[in-house]
Length: 261
Image (cartoon, rainbow, N blue to C red; front, side, top):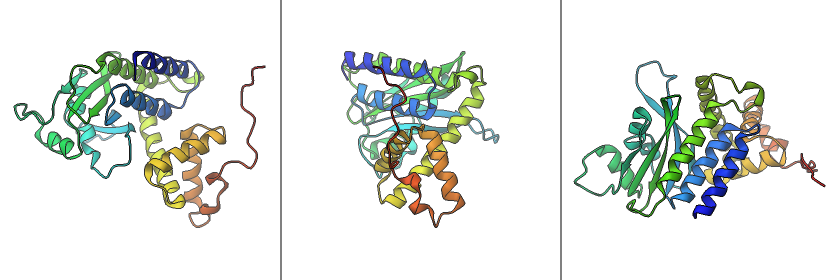
């Protein structure tokens, strides 16, 4: 994106945060804005997952933006620079993943190169001095010097702010870790609903995700809440769910919630 488009993207995100919002949708917007800003091959928001008490430091991708469907193993998104950035609370980078003189993260580099990636920047999500995740951006060419690095940390900061405040105005004083746990669970629910839609509508994952967003919008619901309705209904009666009204737009579209005359 151009600097002007970057500014518009930031303005749109801050407007979302000033009202009630769907956190997975905000993080998804951050990922897509980052991919567009850097002309990147992929961008993802990943959060440290401390729910596993085994002592291992894990990460989960909660939002990602890919230009098209891919069959590549995307496990590298939470390895190498991404994990280092989230763990250390600092920007982590590799200018050219094919540069043999840089020997850091060999397994990550192999997997990323296999997926067609050449450059990477990971921008930490820091809350009150503690890192909770990262915004990791991969490019299909070496990173170079022309990409606007400042926008990456700005988007990461906005993602961190979104996590730190509850999506509902009455819950803005909620605990940050509870919010992280909630978005991790919400991401699982959205992924499950996407899989259901993909199977029943014979769509690939990217098409199914877009269809889910459109269904939620036409039913005037957030993506997270609509996904939960789909998963609940499907689990209640899988055999009959193919004919559920949840899979189609309403017969009569409701009026828009705000009309300014």
